[in-house]
Image 1 (tube, rainbow, N blue to C red):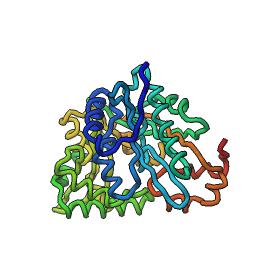
Image 2: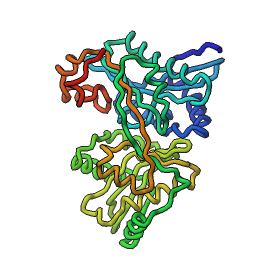
Image 3: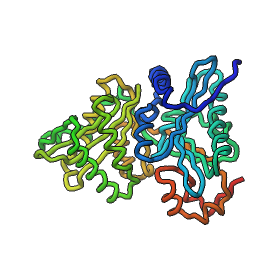
Image 4: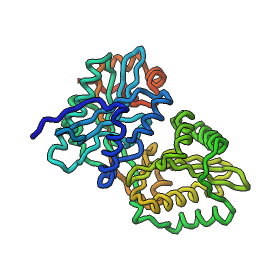
Length: 354
């Protein structure tokens, strides 16, 4: 078997990366909008972290990529295979090829070696990709790791049709006169963000920075992968939805709605409109992203659309002793490394790294 070569992907390889993702995405629904250069640039310009993307070559052909970000502080450096959590990242390759395990091990070890050689590493977290169950590829590649089981929901759009409850909600919204618009303006994005901020405050949801939303809005004029939908009632925006398109999979990125208008069921109308739009444009799957828990109202809302549950996992390589994390505490870790999964807080008192 020819030797594999791994190197850090820079912006000079953006065209190559995009072509690889476009081709792989035709048969691999794990390829999401998050993996493309435009989203990397949005996170970097929003100062979320510094991109660290590795590519794996064989016979001068790109055969695998591992997108990720690092964040440095006075405490050291952390890595996440994508910030903002969820089944969004991990190794992307042809999972059915004979050397898939080797590609995973080579790329993951490249990240770990980079961290060990460049700074004071704290932890590295690897999310498994959307709708994949190749968890052994990760457990076999990383020694002494934590493995956390998570669940998400997805919907094959070929099977999508409104059930009695959602049909009633959509019809109710239409009868009230709620309208959907898709043209993006600075004022609409500002209102969208203000509603989103209030939702995050009310329900203790980790908030994505406004820089991310505004940059996605500015790129949406030229990038078809970025889709804004606004619900208007009496000429007032009462709800919104931001969806990011991959090659065959759309991701439910940011929903928001005004609490006092929720009786109008604008969110259901928005989602039905967006799913229909997504399906018409040739995408096959709707990725609901993660939910707080399977008992949460958010999870139950997503489930009622006829969605299917899918398991994913988070593998965390710990470079520090438990005392390091106990000394810092939750607040300092969150303050130094926002948007990154550094250490599972609920295990602070029980886990001792090997």
